Image (tube, rainbow, N blue to C red):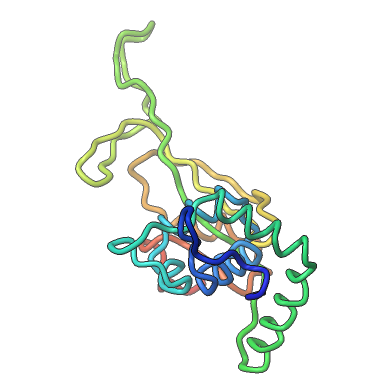
Length: 189
């Protein structure tokens, strides 16, 4: 890849080749779009650590850099061969990149007003606190196939319900890995 990668010159300094390679691997392993991998790098400390990005020093590669890098690999037909070599190396070390489920929840806010026909709040909605902010509504718990990016399970609850009790409803049972927020990490099936 190195002979084809841009060199520093008069324009914008290119992102390091090692960072771009690891970003490409993360993008492929987690089936992320160009903007999706940029967002994942800002959201996940472990992905940033793997890629080699320290946000105190440099920003994560943006979607334009990711797109250009991917197109460069496609132009020189290097992507498939590189991924095969890396996956073979990881497999020889007992590390297997397999599909699993990504689980997360999002709060769906609803008006807390009692200015409606019954003069009451919806009894199925509750309030919760996230950080220093209070929300009133419900929570959508979602299970997504990590390879295909397809939502395979959704369940809802009051916003005040913790994520952990809903975990069994989000798994299909064939997972080899589960990616989750800190609230769920460390839990056994």
